[in-house]
Length: 177
Image (tube, helix red, strand yellow):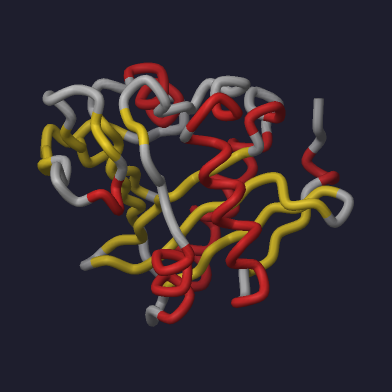
């Protein structure tokens, strides 16, 4: 079990792009993702992100890819940005074999701190595939609430994966910071 003192946080740079893509893919797609509980392998094939997505996040104003490292090794990341009147939290990835060890809670707390203290915002928002009950429960235990606002899944856009079912959609979750 990791302790809080073992993680260090920093912002990704262009030099981190390949490592971030590899981490995100390992957490969500393929057999490696099945070692953790955040896998989307039963819902989607194909890519979860790519170099183009990461570069766009880095180039965007008021957008950060937050990296969590332990002993100089990348163990988690998240995209944190300003969208409308709130912080946006996405692309949350933890090395599958470290999921359930408290890493994700620490990354989420640091992302919330960044949005509140550095971006000066009082609300965090995210979108989650609404059939991911266990994941939604994780966020609800951290103070996020289901808004009932749904967004369509981008069927036909392979940048978001290849769906294995036809009932996918996103739900917006929010938390006041």
